Length: 483
Ligand SMILES: [Fe+2]
Ligand SMILES: [Fe+2]
Image (cartoon, rainbow, N blue to C red):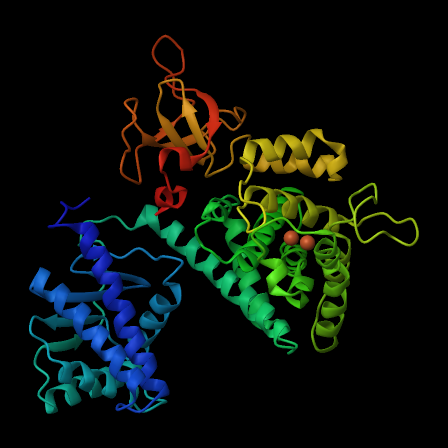
């Protein structure tokens, strides 16, 4: 790891703001003419952010290496909140053949304006190298001296920060965010009375399946990033991730996993037809509201039937939307008219759904359960109506302490579970990141990674989990320990 330059965290933060600023101005200029107030406002913001950063650093170099962005050699981490801006920014640079963007201190508003206008007016159909030459030539012709662009130089390894370990996480975050964006598209489409195409959704699900096939736990950790405040969409994506990971465990092949992923992602589609005031209610629901809420399975069925008219949508997805709250003893809702056996897709989706819903903080459920307690309840209480074999499979998949669980150790340290330990037989000894030291002091993220299967020379374990706790009690944001 390279020595921290100045204040790396500040640089990361301002670097991100600069990217969001450039992207915002670019987008505004694509939609409106230059003199439009929205464009001018976006430019104001960009100039302010860029000035502040140049003042701090002297000059700023934004470099693209693959899909990774470096600002003055500091790698920017992809956040789920600014994912759209990041990917838009990267796509624009790539399409213009730009690998490096260099900005000097004192860059004027006019210079930004010229650069953005050149990018917006580039002729379509030319190849990136040609486009880069055009950008360079036009910048020069317009006397823009404090902003230069250059071709990609692949120097990812020369900057010192190893990309390897983070690469997987970045890829996982992109896949996750793509799933959320696709789910949002479909839900909003249905809300507006349109029948959205599921093409984008299917591509996003394929990416999730590919990622789970590659490493089944790579995405489950992300389901704990609760601060991403879009419950409806993240819940669908989380259920999809858990269902696909479970399906993989059960030996489903890739095509079956695509169908299962689709069924899981669309299971709550009926909620898009409900009044958002009820969906987002912060207090408990009254009887009437509960009845409305309980209509979502059949509303989902109707919606998916309509969607199926123009698309390839497996019947099992429609069935899962209809049956996912029925419970295996059929005491749930909607009450079945005649005896039936719930299909495997339904039972899988129900387990994934129950687990995610109980561990997530929702508007009408302000204290989420800890993951281990949820698994225990699902396993031990038949009244919950889950298929016990599938609950067992979920426990085997996630461990007793799923990724993101906050635990107290016998060393008086507090840690966040990061993954399964090196001995897969010992479910109670996962890999953790230390977050609070024995004196109660917070360890700044990402914290040291410790394998709880590690033992001293006398064979006793160095650290063991005493109990599960809530991260709030220690002022911890679980997501910080993944980024
Ligand atoms: Fe549901
Ligand atoms: Fe659900």
